[in-house]
Structure formats: structure tokens, C-alpha cells
Image (tube, rainbow, N blue to C red; front, side, top):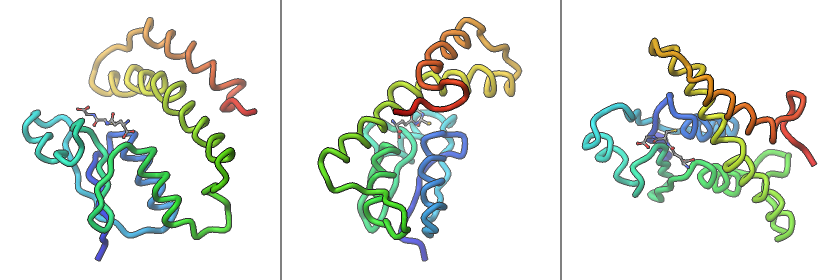
Length: 153
Ligand SMILES: N[C@@H](CCC(=O)N[C@@H](CS)C(=O)NCC(=O)O)C(=O)O
């Protein structure tokens, strides 16, 4: 029986990141679906383990965590069983990884999320995208995606 639990939604990019890592590491887990569109009270009850009331929340052996990037980082430390090097113990290497995790968090994710909302979620709900928001998000994304590739050093 799985000791790990993911509380989240399949409509949540942050939840999907955690699920991708669980599958990548072949780890058993139980998925507890949270309806993020549910009323505030019901949602808060489901996500009471996260002080910000957001998905995902991850539970492993009694330890509860939130913030998808930190859940993934912790998983990489704990289940680093593959040949590829996922975890760096050298402080300088850790800082370089942290730098790029922050770039994804602060430069890539906000405009990518806005774009997804405008060009996928809104049309799926019968709403027209706001072209001003689309243009602004695309301009910001062009700072991190060059010629179809994520910016590299
Ligand atoms: N920085 C957080 C973001 C979490 C987040 O924004 N979750 C969204 C779903 S992707 C959510 O729960 N939204 C509902 C709400 O904020 O009430 C993480 O990466 O885990």
C-alpha cells in the first residue's frame, strides 16, 4: 500500500509536475483529488495542510510538504536511484541548480500559466482570449525561450 499521497488536481500544473516526478521515479502513491473549483470552505478543508490553501500537498511517511518545486527537490534527494546525477552536494553546484529552478519559477512559469489560461482554459469554457494579455505573456516568455528552446548557458 502506498505511503505517499498527493492531494491535488489534474487541472493544476503544479500538481502535474509532482505526478510526473513520481512516475519518473516509479514510486507508488495515492492520489487524492481536490476540486479547486469547489467552494472555499470545502477546498480549504482538503488543503488544510498547506497554509496557503493551494495544490499540491504531498505526504510521505507522515511528513507533509507543499510547494511543488520543493516536493520534487526532496524526492530527488530521497529517491536518487537512477544513474543520472540529480542531486549535488557541492554548494556551488547546488546554487547553480537553485538559480535555474528560480528562473523556471519566476521567469517561465508566470507567463506560461497566463498563456495557458488565455489560449486553452478560456476557449474551453467558451470565453475569448484577451489578446493584450497573450501578447504580454508571449513577450515575457521570449526572454526565456529562444528559437523554440529554453534559454541555456
Ligand atoms: N508555488 C505553488 C503554486 C501552487 C498553486 O498555485 N496551485 C494552484 C493550482 S496550479 C491552486 O491551488 N490554485 C487554487 C487557489 O489558489 O485557490 C507550487 O508550485 O506548488
